[in-house]
Every structure is written in C-alpha cells, then in structure tokens.
Length: 102
Image (cartoon, rainbow, N blue to C red):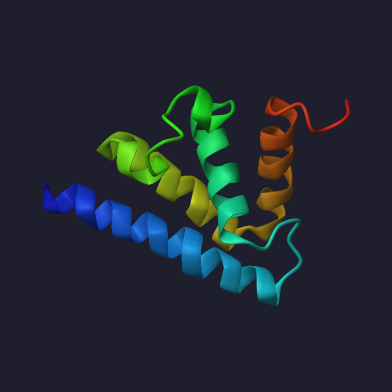
C-alpha cells in the first residue's frame, strides 16, 4: 500500500476519532461523536449521502482515493478550526438525508 495514502488515512482518522470529538468538548458544536463527524465530512465530500457513493459494507475511509482523502481532511480541518462551520456542514448533511425541515 502506498505510504502516502496510509498517512492520509491516519490523519483523517485522527481528525474524526480524536481531534474533532475533543474539540466538541471545548466549544459548542451540534454534534460530538466521531460517527457524526464522519457523516458530516463524507456527506459534504460527496454532496449527498456518502453511502450513495460508497459501499456500506466496507469502512468508508478505506474506499477513498488520495484526492478524496485530501478533500475530506480539508473539510475536517475546517470544522476543527471554525467550529461554526460544523453547524452549516451538518445542516447540509441532514438536508441531503431528508432529516432537516425546509
């Protein structure tokens, strides 16, 4: 496996599983669990429900190519540095899933 993609996956997982949940303990965010952050990042990456683009039978992050991982990391980093962005990114995700009233 390419070391670059392994490093990108490791960085993505660190953001989703550690950094974002830890940040949610420090500032107000509409979500706090890693699976919620993953949903928000992936849905915004694909501009729709991520499982319409990827298999639900495999870990989503393992199905992303390098370009997608770079973009997913950028979204996650935006959420980390601008906690207010979590709100509108989450609203995007919920809207695409039909869980946000218009």
